[in-house]
Image (cartoon, rainbow, N blue to C red; front, top):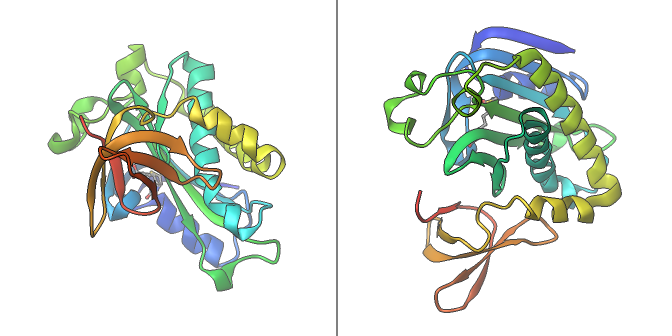
Length: 245
Ligand code: BTN
């Protein structure tokens, strides 16, 4: 079932609440714009009219320790739809932002339902996707305008948001199913589009600030970097970005 809102605060908030109240896997919440789109690390996600903002409830058939990989599967699925539909070539910035050139075109935020709300089948996750589609750069907050791009800016034309939504939903569902059957191949495919690999990156968490080189993901979907002294680090939380951005 797809629930459409002209305007809301956050489709992830609504989808999460609905899932906690028993909405089944496959429930989708879409909004034409959001006032408080949720991003990673507690940041907000600018969501002006013209973009595509949706959240889908999924119930991956995976052991709990593999559920974090859902976020990588969703990012790869969205990348592949943009490539197939528009011949653009987005790179994926771990864990799952999509970039065209050095600018962000999409962000994905996966939120897990609290354990006591999990279904008998296993974990349930809300996958939230925000994609800059037909919006114009001037519609974004001034402080992010230099950092974002839109499909419109790349293609020079508007695209059909409803068709795109259908394609993305199908691809995300297949991507999540694929995790259960050929996870290693999916992770290998993901590595082909890794924006950070062999690039200078900066990693920041509460305790440290590391400059290094991106080395790709581990089989658990964590990110590896090597710092300038040659020491290897595996990134669990905190923020990782290209040093030049
Ligand atoms: C990020 O860039 O940090 C992730 C952004 C995810 C934004 C999408 S928009 C639809 C869904 N609803 C939300 O509140 N957030 C996600």
